[in-house]
Image (cartoon, rainbow, N blue to C red; front, top):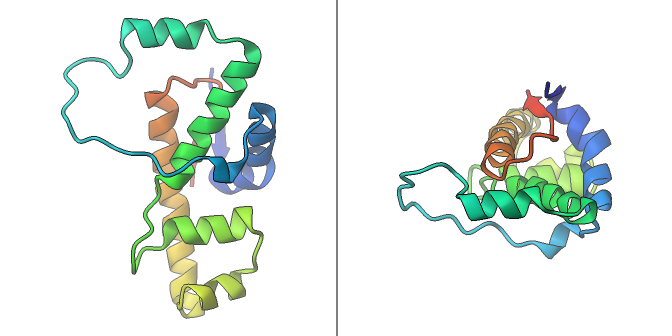
Length: 143
């Protein structure tokens, strides 16, 4: 059975654990390139499934860490919805909420609302990529 975990707890306690286990640097990966071509079959084909199943423990750790970073970098970062910037500034760069609010040019109230929305978006994207990349060892996140 998969564990369910609060997104804030995951980002503060487990995020770096997975990144370090995977032997990757957060800034190694660019934002995912998405295709909007309809997919008429399951998310992974037989060959992909066998490759995923045959990974060594180290390869699997890197794959799982990469999945988390993909979810993080997939978050919205456009004017008015600076979700990725807010999350990176707080959880990666460890800036204060006040410094981030100034950086993204939001009042305290609007910043709190934007941060909550950013956490909700990350939760949805994380849970999507967890399934898409077949990583059942990752917890299901909730806000």
